[in-house]
Image (cartoon, rainbow, N blue to C red; front, side, top):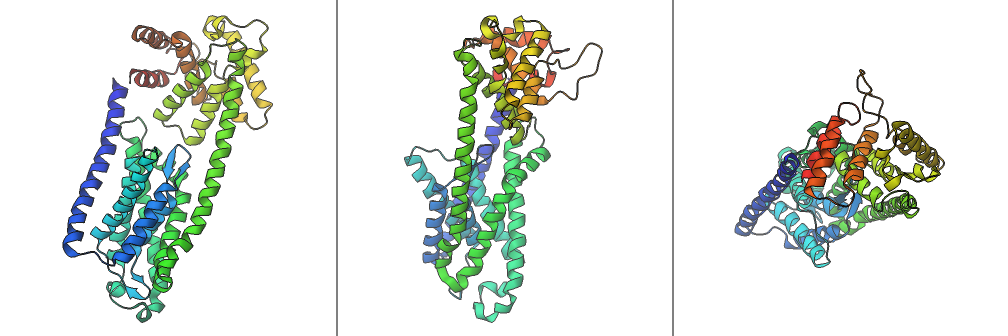
Length: 425
């Protein structure tokens, strides 16, 4: 029940952000139509570039969708002050409308192609453009959008520095908004989530901001030709991201194939590794593990039973709950030895090696050296051993009750509570 409430709270926050941005864009559209569109040719160019950028998305670690070209074009339009030497003074309302129209066109094409865009991520792009435009107009020289570029050409270096500062502030606001949305309704603290967002997205935001600044500074002399020219580096960066993502996908598929060896050999129940991995990742995310920890948790959960391949006689049903604790630890250590032979999964091997260790021993304090990933796998694997493929209410309740009875020594209470909330949802 609590998990359902937490997930609902997270959904409500996302919908609230999207609703506020949508209403703001409708109001901005009214102002823009009432006052008239400034430089329709420039508007068309930026709307088209943002729309194309939405179609060329990449996935950052943690399943974070990103559209670098669309984001840089949105920032570039917010900072735009001249095109071809002629001043351009587009109101903030028009900035919001242009970015919203561009992302709407790109999202519509994605829907037609069978891809569902994430509305909260799209809304953040509009918010970032509005923040950049507001801060830049509040701090830039007043004659910047009224005089020809030739009249203040020597002062452009200060304008460039101002743009860099504006972009840095905009990036912080965007990442903070992403952290707020992700942390709402969860156990994870906002500060921790913000650090995670900065670690995952700060580098890309730097590239996006730099490209937006270059667009705004180059259009006074290069006109609209600057837009496709300065998007080329980001396009090449996206190709590199896609190659990296493809390599990670292949790596994960290889590990999934290895995890099925124990199932094919009849050592564990079919689908056990996949179920444990999916549920363990859900628990890890709810408990606030970083993306690198989530990755190690996923790999360790997939391979946590590979040590059973070293047994002469398979454990009945593959459930280590029916064997003595000493045997459980031996299986875990055998699995860790197998994983260490890869030479690249040492952390995963350490997690697997300690998955059978109790949360705390009799009359002792909790074992702080026990990895949180090992605690999660221990509880989730035991839960799946008890329920298997039958996810009926009675079976689930009995399994969770048995885990609660073991919270004194065997299972981490925080893990069991989180698992209970996720299962209840």
